[in-house]
Image (tube, rainbow, N blue to C red; front, side):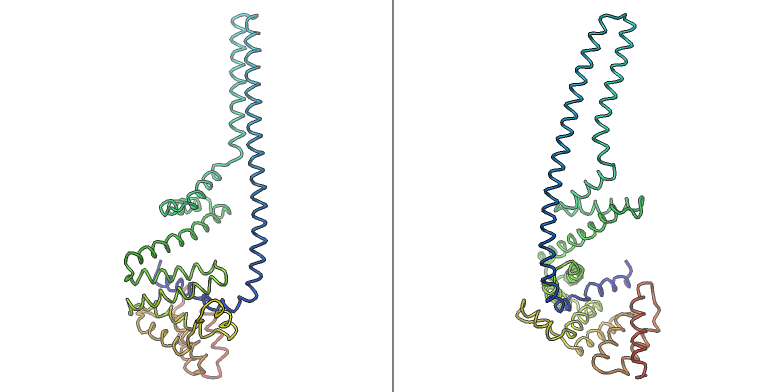
Length: 340
């Protein structure tokens, strides 16, 4: 992963981690109803699956019993008939018996195997490994799914299993970072990656979980900066957090305060300082950081300086990852064009 890609991952991990509080009032009750409904549906589906499994096992058992009884009767009948025929006829009858028995054996095996394809069997094993609390098995399943995806691209079952594996990998890596900090809490990069992974995880959390993750995110960033103040990405991430905190409406702060004694706080001046420091420490152009400098300046009413920052961002070389940033830069340039 290139350094630029890393920077966009960092930005994506931070965006929205604090501002989720504002959606809580509406989403909280909606999600509660949704979770309750999903729990009922899952319980019903679980019962239905269990019943289907029991019926399937019963049918297989009955089929095997029936085949077994038929084989015994068929063999006894042919042995009796064989005593009244010539040895040549006996050989012919015996060959027919063997052929028929082989046919019924094969049919029985095929009826069992036909219910599960080779790919389904592999994915079942992958699921078992992904559900295990074993980092080695999770990594092995992740690699195996990547190989399957290369052989069968755009296969829906492989793709969603790969998505599950990615999520499990995030959880596993986060556990590793936390384990590293339990052994040695003075590793800046361990705190940094804990913060990044918390940001990624927050995308799948409830509203309350996202708010809680915001505080945890901030704690790890503060610890990482205390240990390594020269990392530009840390100051950028802290700037993003502070900018989002400064953008909170009064009612969003009220909601956050219902869960925590002190809601997230920050000012646009503080956020601007973090972004400017990140820029001074970064050895290459950083378009997203420059855009956020401009947005802080706009929030502070310093429009002429904001236009200069936007022009600077617009002049920077773009990559395929910059499409959204480029669009926002152009929109803001057009909006504040009169301040040139």
